[in-house]
Length: 193
Image (cartoon, rainbow, N blue to C red; front, side):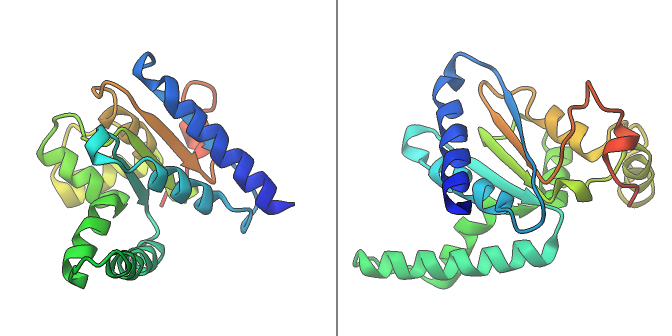
């Protein structure tokens, strides 16, 4: 039963990607109990939307560093093996570089955008483990104390959404979280660190 729901959910998100050329941005939320498959849905959507020749790019973001490390290592090994089966030689270092641009710790993504505020190249952003996101108060305090950003005025999810405001098309998928910044007050939606 679970695999059917995962397949249906993934297909739904893939269908949402089709009309993106006429819609500026779609924000989706995937919720469920631990182990329900939210991370798998996010990874599946992200990996199916990786086709640089067609201009499709995605980024999978998480604040869970151990999860990111495990995913990066597993996908690096998989990339090396798949390339080997195709008769291509690729070093693990080269494969890891490609994977690291696709699977990132959310804080690295945020910091890169603070340095260069041009619209990100990614058209699909998946924010997994979103329940770990900091509320506005915690994020502002951290940005002032640790990053020297005195005028920072966002919660982590608000900032991620603002990063994607300038792209032509985009899908933003929040896994593990039920929130729409217009409907639920931020202090109810996010943790304070």
